[in-house]
Length: 284
Image 1 (spheres, one colour):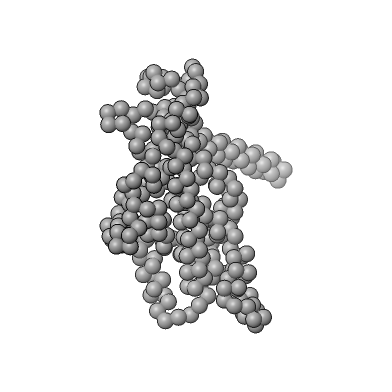
Image 2: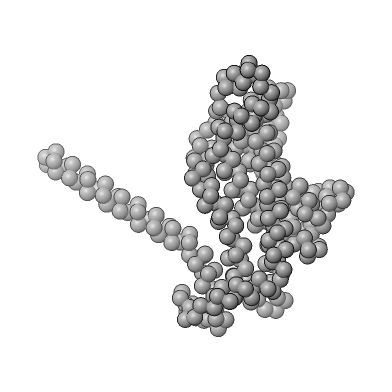
């Protein structure tokens, strides 16, 4: 077999491989998007088609008024406002804590630094349910139970974001920091003008993960809140379940609307998120 024939076979194999990978990616994308499609068609189906067998992937009629009906069944404007406040404030606090603590562990030398860092990492092995009772008691003692601050503050300090921040910031050259100190910059100025511009992909990762976590959180608000004027979107969705009957049109319509803010945030930070995940995976 001549070299030209081998090159032709290699090109055909490469083309077949590219097609196979493309088809695999298309299939994976369809599988990932199917739940959102099913939420949409269930939200706009007539009630009798929801329980039809075999299931219908395309409704005979689109009832778009189901979205308005779902939002009228509960004060979702209040729930969305509360979720927006909780998510925005807690994301700001959590990301700030992670970056500042990661900067400290990455660039400062102090006694027992490695031991303290290992202790922080060890908290990743503790289920969140174990810490809920102590956090509830602390929130009650502080007088923030049944308030939005009670939902916001206790989960703000978490170890995963700190670990990612420390690993990412460790690869920033120390010479940049020393140059700033020689020029008379304070430590906060170094953090603001040298560290932050170099960790934008990391910030995108932390923002997206925190927004998803806090927006979709149900357990902690359920424990902390008893007054429905402080309810978040997820608590509002849970109240759409009747004692004996669930209106799946309303549930799916409201759930689809509740997904949109997180999807919007992801689309904004998508490029930086991919860069940050890749960088965080190869650093350290």
